[in-house]
Length: 315
Image (cartoon, rainbow, N blue to C red):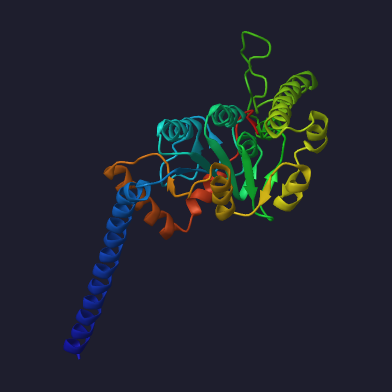
């Protein structure tokens, strides 16, 4: 009886070992395939290309890392790719593939100004979302294509934070205020925001909002009063944005490519321009993706739900 039990246990262990080996093999095969796809695809796609597609995905920040596995966009990385495409004589046009809710007002304007300065045909291809700061960028292109259900517009600026003054008072925690300069701790979450400081912050938001309205009106060739009338922060579907003059055409990649072909009288062939990654970065990215899949995004959800502890102005 004991011998049968021992044999049964050994059989179960063998199956467990087999399963572990298969899981490890699957992990490494996926990792190797992903690395080779990342490293080799750029070279093959770029051969003979005359249109550069530059992805702008996720929130937009000034110093974010826009690597192949990143879910955010860094303005300096995008500007670097725009420069690269602009300096390539084979590239005749640039498509910004946008799927972003916006982000830092400064970072958004940095990219928009760069796009406006280019001497090549530029097209914004808005996918699911091209709103707020991302729309600011799109408005600087020569032509905007959006799906009829794309979320766009949202011409506004937001600044918010959680205030803990009542919470810390309840638990007998004291905020000791030491400043040299009366406004130095304006917006700190550990004390109530006085009306005069609220008015100052609102004034800053209004100024940035005005810059946003000016940029859209100038870039789109629209009357400023007309833009201001719809610049209450509301988002619009692509079909609605078309009626307001915020986009030029409903469609997707095919329509963006067709616009370039008709405008420049060329047969368009596209290549994706994005930040190059090293072998080690690719390896780290693949491992991160695998870990993320196993965890089903729980960690990311927790991080994104994290409250801000200070004033932040976002377009």
